[in-house]
Image 1: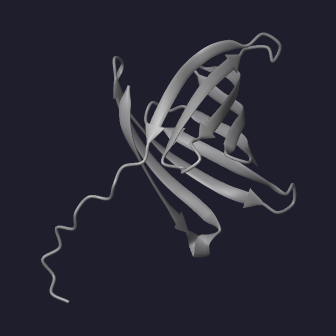
Image 2: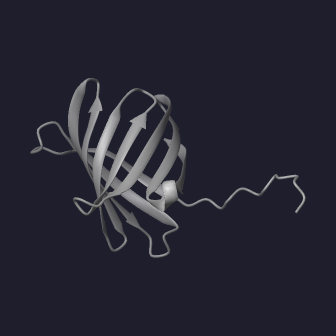
Length: 130
């Protein structure tokens, strides 16, 4: 599977909005992700809405160069538990992740592995004069 992930801060910098498009053997899927700081629980949260109608909700923890998502997602009308640590390279230009899912919270199976590389910004095509 390959894709593009584009994120930016919104609403005064208190939230991160990300849009992702992935293409693979099952076709194309798009998603909208909103990440936020929860001042009550003092943690980060993430809610993702996919173009196939599924939704996920996660808590995000950060430790050094590792970001871990833990939470739930719904697929095929059934809820699953999910955990995915993403480990960034020291320069934060790339990352790897291995996700696991569980139907009962006790038995975990591999869901996917991923590699990410930060792309250089596309050249500006603006014709506006400065």
